Image 1 (tube, rainbow, N blue to C red):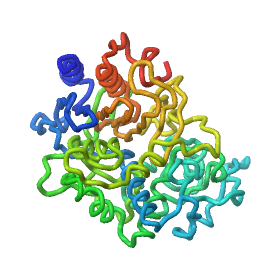
Image 2 (cartoon, helix red, strand yellow; image 1 turned 180 degrees about the vertical axis):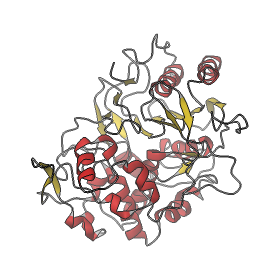
Image 3 (spheres, rainbow, N blue to C red; image 1 turned 90 degrees about the vertical axis):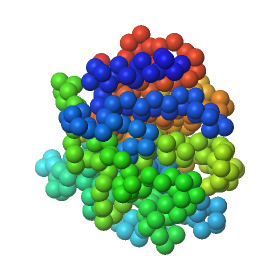
Image 4 (cartoon, helix red, strand yellow; image 1 turned 45 degrees about the vertical axis):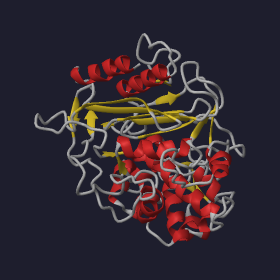
Length: 416
């Protein structure tokens, strides 16, 4: 397996199809099944540092599971209920309306929601809150009111107004991937009385000794992996401003974190083991909490259509594609769950998600395995990274390589 994966990752770098790539697979005990890191922190700089497993990388929506764990810690303490109305903690929520279309002049048609938004809705992406990156009506609304629709970027600057967009549907009636976990972060802040990054640092990162993770780069960290943009001709250009080293006024609980391959896999390993790290014995959640909320379907209250499928409404941020095509999926309090076995990898009941800069992971409790791959490339759903993630999964389960990128049976599908 090692030579097979080393060859695939190294070839992607030498052919300059990717600037750098880091991948890891662990078993339940924490033993390394595979670890490979190739490339440099910038494809545009000949003097750029080599990528390592401790290189800080913006992890984007990989932040979401961390924030969900923080909320579940408060649930365990009896300080929070998933049935609580969100406006109990964030009063401004009562003023958010539903976007019901547009008038002929392009002005939005808004109405009051028919249902009340709850904490459970935030954790399951059923609150109606969308991402402009993946929702064209929200882009149209923000353009009309003169907001920057590239929310995945503007929110990094921490402008609170960027979070105030209308709902795509009534809470609890539809799955819509969006800024739900950002609002969950605001709930954690209100309940704990701490800033989200301080809470997570104290209650998750410090106990797990994740020293290179947080809202900004640590002084002792190596040079960060600079985010690269892929042009229409498939070329890559480094954008030095996108390193994760920002100090926004408002941190988005859905995507503010910078982490490393070693740190984030430590966190994933702890979740895989029902909240306790197998080597240190550090516990961040109780086993029943992980079982009942993170690895259990939590969206039986509404249709699950669209889970795992993302439509790129802002092309330079995301492509359009589907994760685990043809596999029945649902959502828990933090993860996308596949309800069927994946023919070339993970078992039914596995949890997974991703980060905008082309980071992908899955946790398979039945097999006792996890896999995680990191890049710093936009737009999301990059076929080169997805193909390597598919190869990592296939190798981990002793399955044959795909004959072509995205062929039937791969863990992703992109439009032709």
